[in-house]
Amino acid sequence: MLNSLIAGLTSGGVYALLGLCVVLTYRLVAVVNFAMAATGAVGAYVMVSLIGVGVHGALALAAGVVAGAALSALVGAILVRWFGEHSERTKAAVTVALYVAVMAIGLRVFGSATTGTRRFPAPLDGPAFVLGDVVVPVSTLVSLAFAALITAGVGLLFSRTLLGLRLQALSERPTTAQVVGIAVPRLAMAVWAVIGGLSTLVIVLVAPRLGGDFATLGNLITTALAVAMVGAFRSLPMTLAGGLILGLLEGVAVSLSGLQADRGVVPFLVILVLLWWRSRNEVWDTAHTR
Amino acid sequence: MSGSGSTPGPDPAQSPAPAPATSLDAHVSPDPHHGLDPHIGSDAVLSLDGVGVNRGEAEIVHEVSLEVGPGTVTVVLGSNGAGKTTLMDGIAGVAQVSSGAIRLSGRPIEKLPTYRRARAGLGYVEQSRTVFRTLTVEQNLLVSRSGQGELDRVFTLFPELERRRNLQAGHLSGGEQQMLVLGRALVADPRVMLIDEMSMGLAPVVVRRLMGAVGDLVGLGISVLLIEQFAALALEIGTRAYVLRKGRVVYDGSCAELRRDPELLHESYFGAAPV
Image 1 (cartoon, rainbow over the protein chains, first blue to last red):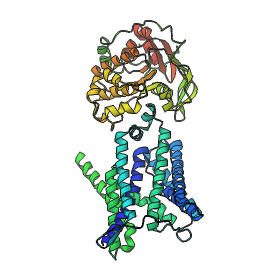
Image 2 (cartoon, rainbow over the protein chains, first blue to last red):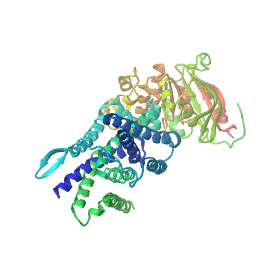
Image 3 (cartoon, helix red, strand yellow):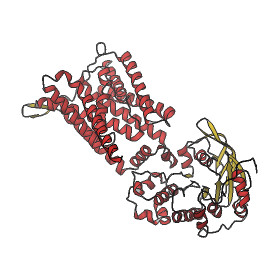
Image 4 (spheres, chains in turn purple, cyan):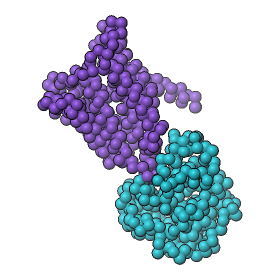
């Protein structure tokens, strides 16, 4: 059981990172980005493909991050250029279409679960320390530290820097942000690129544990959205907590023999429970305003 | 001046709220200029030449030419739907300019994106008190501050903002929010400030305060292009006036002339003298 919980915690850190990417995209450029994990998967596959032809790991990682950032920037450019004045729903629908396109192209280029599973390097799978008789791998600590760093770092960026203030202004009133002299298109593209690079790093971190086929990695968006819902697409600390809880729930599911095969259902259950809970509040509020 | 027939309506000098406009008149400094500024035309800070502006696919503003002289308040009047806000949005780059030329200190700006027009010296106070609600008063000012812009200049103009500098802008009163939007434009160190309906939804005492601040902006050397629902009040502080009807300029002359001749103002608004 403890072993499964530790494994769940590793996943939880990564899920938190995925959720943070979704929340940051939504907060900064007001888009629910369904294509986020797929763009990260493309970056990760560029990395592993380059390693496959003999490129040094660090160089391949850098190239993968750049590829993920560039693809995400392309998604952002499409949204900024042609859908800038459209509603959030339309923008989300556009990212769904782009998700389908990226997945189709990715599966074609990199192969499916049966034809294209790659062996991702796992330099962080060594033991960090032993807890009781359970070995805690370095990857657990790295993913947790990375998630905490992003949460705290973005909080500080928003509150302590001019760039953070401008990002918040962009998020709240994009048109007014331009009126006061903020280069909104450039800033928005930078946000998309950074999120793309970050997504690639997260997918690279989780790929060795999940098997390394393109479809599985691209479909991690379901988990990311479930985690983002815990933070109501707004709160970074709640998103961090949501990721960890989701990871632990998966760990518990794995440790119970009857539920082991169904652990993939956990994100859907979390989404359903949150939707039910929020709609319950709305019904309650509506009843009280009548 | 064109004079196509429209149904005569209420006196535009008093619209949309006659009583407050009249009650405010006595508190506004009279305009020292009674004719057109002789400098306008030769060294206009902002000039429009045959400008058309679109909303979506439809052209709302047609072939508008106007000039804003240095250190003056130029007033744009017109009934609801005349295209005043669309014109301002076109100048600021928020709406698409379909034809014509816009020059800021002689430099064409109509092809520049919105943020570059702002950096070139065009301040825009939009309708609806567009503060960044989650940022504090001070942070609202910091996001738009240019190299030379000083927060102290804003706090001197609006001391009430200094007392609330750490309060979230969403918690300010309507008048304070409007002061903040004016101050935010001021810290960007603009040459021209476009001000669109800043009195909307505010108490007369607050409007009086804000109009005084517009006079202070001119004292700082900033030229102002002003849209104002209280026509009489705007004409008191303005030098030159333009009246828009159906997206076209139907009057171009002095504010003093419109002040003296309410029938002319009415005809400019609606295309017919009052019955």
